[in-house]
Length: 251
Length: 67
Image (cartoon, rainbow over all chains, first blue to last red; front, side, top):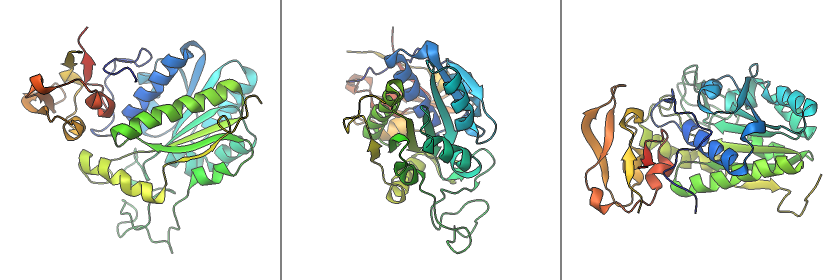
């Protein structure tokens, strides 16, 4: 039974700048709880991305570095190779991880760098005003696809977790969501597992969260939270690869 | 049982806690906070059994225990 109604120690008391109903701050809280439980706060370095999560250093009380757009995994590679005793995680959006940074991310994963990548998939570019992103659902209306995403023009949604699950360097690959209380609890377990894999040095751990973006989906917070279930039809919520449970204990 | 405190200055009025509360003890109050949002409040506090679902779903960490 997790401890409820307790403010995590590594979360600062600053007010979040996120829009009402955004799932970013739920994931921030889970991340801080996991960092507290594992006791790795003093040796953790986070890598913030460009996007809504670029103010990560205002909220999470660990060392945070701001990487250029999409290059978090490459910067994380450098940190982890220079200081293998540190715990490195990246916190990126779908526009950062799957669009501009896809090359960096895929190569870091295929090299099996021992870092944890957390990707928040809300299917649009949230900060810049809701443009179409690689993970936008088919026929979803965005600012730049006002008639819905047409597969003939904009192509099909990119399923990053399925791609990364096929890589040999990837030790953990899963997709979660935080739109119901049960999924929040499962998401925390996934986060904990991703960090445990890194602490054991098994390889790249990738974790994707489906998230709501009520403002850019033009919905109220509750309908947006319900709409995440529709995202889950295209992006199934499951663990694709977990080498720790498959019996591999050391690198 | 835990006593729950609502940090009204953090609330953004998204209503996720009201939607997911199994006992339906939460609702919007008439108060507004500094950011201008209508804040959440108890209207049947005696029915609350501190299950913690509002804490799990709240994006803004409004619900904390009183101590």
